[in-house]
Length: 101
Image (cartoon, rainbow, N blue to C red):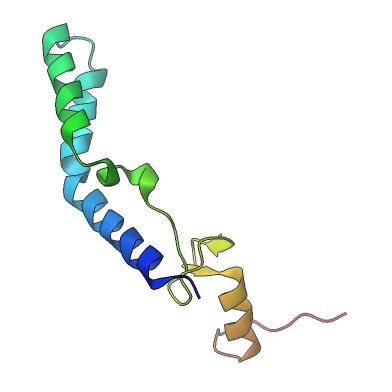
């Protein structure tokens, strides 16, 4: 089980990412558009720099919904490999059985 503080901090980053996603996207579009005057692009860069650092999507870490583990994460299932194994051994994941040969 991961530390509660790490899990809560990551949730806070996730909320900030969602809150500022549209604003960041529009500013990045202005910065990338070469037809816009250089002064306006520079102003957009300054505005982007003034946004909170944690509003950047690269700061968000995928974590297991059950344990909070950051490593060995399956995106499709939203859980770590260890939680997946535990639930499958208990028979709580439909269609998943332990392999043997």
